[in-house]
Every structure is written in structure tokens, then in C-alpha cells.
Length: 118
Ligand code: HEC
Image 1 (cartoon, protein in one colour):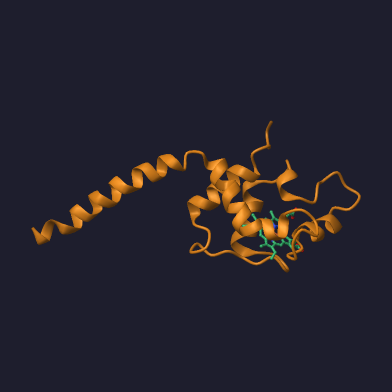
Image 2: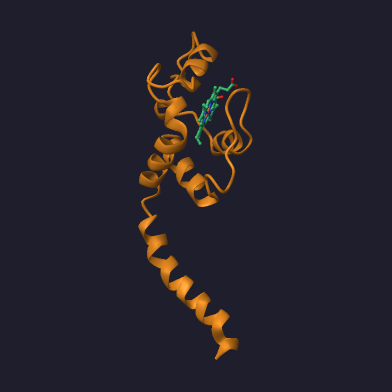
């Protein structure tokens, strides 16, 4: 009985994980949630918060057609979103897997890169 315990636990974990995975099928919805929790404070409306991502990008892209707010961008690539999230850049912090898991990052990519190729 005790020897079978690991297998039983694995079975229970799998049974619990399956509905969770199905609930996350709506990855853009999850991506929006992740964005609001971790990114919105800096990449939301200008002057809406103190983080400064929108203001910095507005300065970076001044004189171009590229919008300052990340959610309005249609040119974001998976590579850029993943690299910036995991490594940060200048005053943007990096995010660990204990903060944003790989599956949450995938949902975030699905949300932010949603307009490309349309
Ligand atoms: C503490 C504020 C802050 C937070 C939180 C933050 N960012 Fe940033 N982000 C910045 C700043 C500032 C820049 C501009 C960096 C620079 O100066 O190069 C930036 C740049 C970026 C860029 C590069 C855009 C470009 O055109 O080069 C991406 C992509 C990005 N952030 C995504 C995210 C995502 C996704 C999250 C959430 C997981 C996030 N950021 C959270 C402040 C933040």
C-alpha cells in the first residue's frame, strides 16, 4: 500500500490538473489577467501609475506610429515579450518563474502578440 502511494498521488494530481488546463484554454483571458497583475502598473494608461513603462516607450517611439501602450501594439513578437519578461531591460524588472510561470507567460504572449499576422 505504501509503495503505491507515489502513483496514487500522481493520479490525484493529474486528475486535479486536467480541469485546470481546460480552464486555461482561454489563454488570452488568462494573459490579460497576468498583464493586469504584473505589467499594467507600468504599461497601463500614462500617468495612471508610477511605473513609467508607457512614458518611457512614448519617449522611445516619439515621432513613429508605434503606440506607447503595450496593449495597443500590433508589432510585438513572442521573442521580445519573453525576453523582456524574463530578463528585464534598463528600469524594467525581470520576472521569475515563481512570479510568472511558463504557462502564464505563454498566455501573456497569446494576449500581447494577438494582433500579429492579422
Ligand atoms: C516597473 C515597471 C515595469 C513593469 C512592472 C513592466 N515593465 Fe515592461 N518596460 C518598462 C520600461 C521602463 C520599459 C522601457 C525599457 C527601456 O528603457 O529600454 C519597458 C519595456 C518593455 C517592452 C519593450 C517594448 C519595446 O518596444 O522595446 C516590453 C515588450 C515590455 N516592457 C513588456 C512587459 C511585460 C510583458 C510586463 C509584465 C510581465 C512588463 N513589461 C512589466 C517598465 C516596466
